[in-house]
Length: 129
Image 1 (cartoon, rainbow, N blue to C red):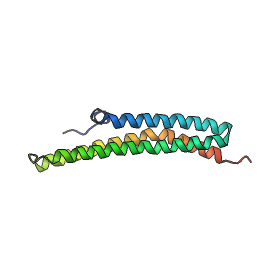
Image 2 (cartoon, rainbow, N blue to C red; image 1 turned 180 degrees about the horizontal axis):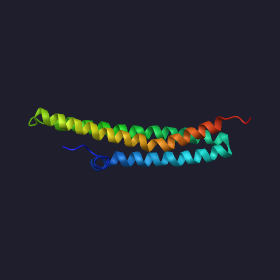
Image 3 (tube, rainbow, N blue to C red; image 1 turned 180 degrees about the vertical axis):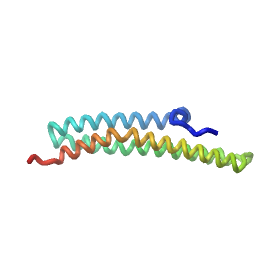
Image 4 (spheres, rainbow, N blue to C red; image 1 turned 30 degrees about the horizontal axis):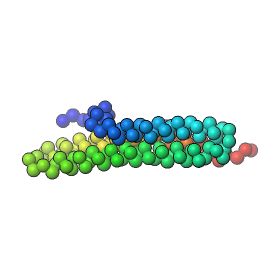
């Protein structure tokens, strides 16, 4: 059995990758809006930035759900009495790697929006000197 690539993990579990991408993209757009709002009106930027940070955290959570789904699928498969110990080990290892891919993708999808939101929060809390 070969190591799963990110593309292979996407093919096997596209729902969580798609959800992570969509939520991460919304967080990114809100992060840009929050930075623009912080440049104009500091009070308007804070709620937008907080929502963008929360969406970034939700994106990581979606990746975590994908990882949990991979593990649960592996548990269902290894329950088959016809599998040997070596087969069960390979299935568990494959599921762990696929689950890590979901988690890594969720974290990567959340990073741009969350970072922009943090920048907007910092910009909105700075005092004019």
